Length: 282
Image (cartoon, rainbow, N blue to C red; front, side, top):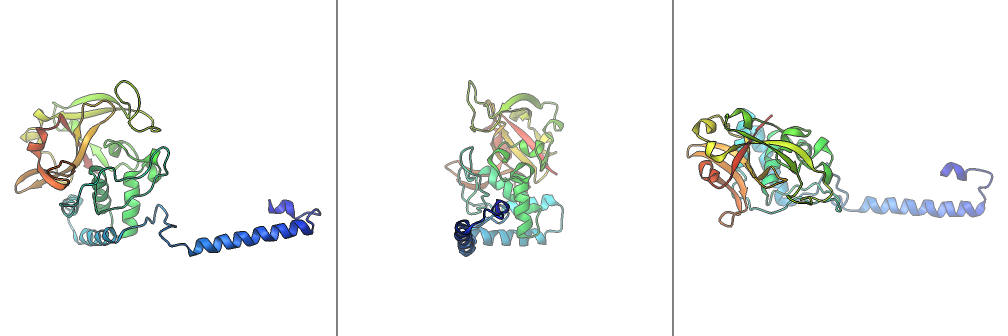
């Protein structure tokens, strides 16, 4: 457009108009430069509250002190969230609302809890943590609602793949069910604007999760509570932890008796759900 003004028709009136526009642009740029950095935060540099900022630094220091396998990092990092208050629907974004990169360790829901632990276990500094969180939570690292990994099994099927679905390898009793994720029974979608995804979901019926199955689980495995509800793969998620007190399902619990991150005995939890989906961290 500037090139079209640089012609023989570029008279004084046009020049004065062009000068005013240029001054307005300079003023706007100067004003933006004075805005707080929080208002100018980018997806790779989200605004963090003081508590979250401090906790990230503490957790990264812990991660850097762990010399063993990543399973040990997953166990220790996840334990530091025990007692963290539960918060429902922590993420912000929809088909009609721009997606925001939420990083809030003051409270977690069951999915953001796994997001943070998984990303922290792969990171050595804050910048790496943010990038790993984006890669864990969003397909191809694109911070957009449509690219958010809304379903537990997305971790095993969509980039960046964070885990491998090993459910069917643990027992012959595993069952595979074809599902249309996001499609409600009858009609309608759970998440408007999100497409329906055809996916075969393999789970182990709770009655078949015996000692032989449990003995094959590893600390750090991601566990999903299979749901028979149409359009969903699981109803809740957590982390398998082997402890001196037996196998635990470490999870951000919304139950009124908990409302925080807790260790629930796995065998006890299995009596309350139809089955188990197991993803092993890559």
